[in-house]
Image 1 (cartoon, rainbow, N blue to C red):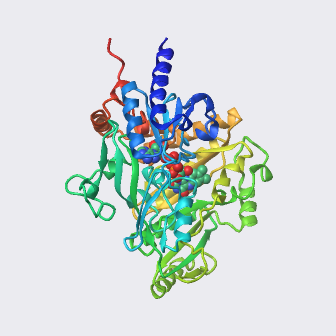
Image 2 (spheres, rainbow, N blue to C red; image 1 turned 60 degrees about the horizontal axis):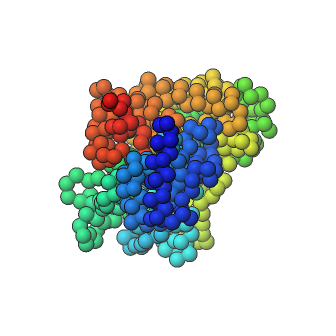
Image 3 (spheres, rainbow, N blue to C red; image 1 turned 60 degrees about the vertical axis):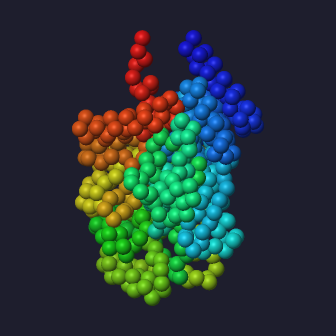
Length: 516
Ligand SMILES: Cc1cc2nc3c(=O)[nH]c(=O)nc-3n(C[C@H](O)[C@H](O)[C@H](O)COP(=O)(O)OP(=O)(O)OC[C@H]3O[C@@H](n4cnc5c(N)ncnc54)[C@H](O)[C@@H]3O)c2cc1C
């Protein structure tokens, strides 16, 4: 009976939405295919959406939100929905309607002198990159490992890229947001009717709200200003390979200092050998036993085959040629005696042929990591934040590696080094069609989150299946932060329709049992 009522509500809402956006832009539940949801979710029903709606403009988004509130139908907004490893476009709560914004894909403005662009949520990294190159605009977008996503969706998840503007959430400036009531907000200087510094100065007067819409379920971002790095006069790039697991300790210590001193300005992505090797080959070419992770002798063979160290990372210097040459000398001195070869820098100066190390065309190669386990390969991420202290990072890596071994899974990870913190992104590779492999992967992800929590480390981002667990670990003062989140959620989203459960935040009617 309850099911019928829910279905009826959804059908009424979809009918009303059809009258706003047209039947061509609504896909019913029966038409939904795996790629539209979460390509790596083994249980197709767990996060099955009720429908997908694809509005073309802010006004249509506002109308959909008002209809959803009227019919108590939940919406799950995505920009391009490529959140692979964290749940794709699938909603946390089955039956929610995916609000897919990929049709809103206009590059609204590029200000070359001001070094920013204004984009809609459907604008992808590849689209912007191609546009800038085609128009000869000397601005460089920061691109993540998965380039199929969107500037806005990735930044709203606090995504990471490889160049100096790689902390994407920090480079959002000025948002347009549809609130869960359907009202429209422009943040910062956009709150002035004729605000001309909307995408130049991040705050307005008084409390600033941009970050409130990052990793939250409090609004739908329909456009944003994104700061872009001006093309430098020159770049130098080198790839460093460290032969031993134990090198991680001094490497994190040194790299964090280089970041703190601003000698290296980009997030430094230190990946283990498998993070690179998995892109080039399949597991069964190296090791046939499913019940053990790859042994050390095989690790050595893999490293030899691809010329990899146990840990590998790129370093990039950008700026004036005289300055970066001097900086490169400092790096050479810093690594002398630590690596068994002189650092080799590859150079680019303005006027050289593209791509520059900064403006590299988005590449799909990195996505092949998932094929390590074979044709039905899939993955999950767990991603705790640690202090940028070599001893702690190294101890953490040893513990994590042990958890991978205990769960018969190959250790695949990166450590993303910032000036004061390190994000440890564990890539848990598994086979989608093998229940044992799926169970192992999920058990491992849970164990890693628990272990991190026990050591005082919280997740920076979480997969749908682990969002609640990750949110529960933020437990200071009897979950005081959750109490505040609930208060704000209820005030801003009184009908409780927007992305219920996102990062552990539920609307009142779904977190409390119904009263009689
Ligand atoms: C091999 C591999 C490598 C990867 N490498 C990286 C990497 O280097 N760096 C990185 O950051 N990620 C990486 N990822 C993870 C992920 O694929 C990317 O972050 C991707 O950019 C996210 O997809 P998207 O941009 O389409 O975001 P979406 O899926 O559109 O959005 C993500 C989430 O943000 C929220 N959201 C999105 N848009 C809106 C909106 N307009 N309003 C309100 N809320 C919204 C929603 O909660 C949504 O679920 C990688 C994944 C894989 C498989």
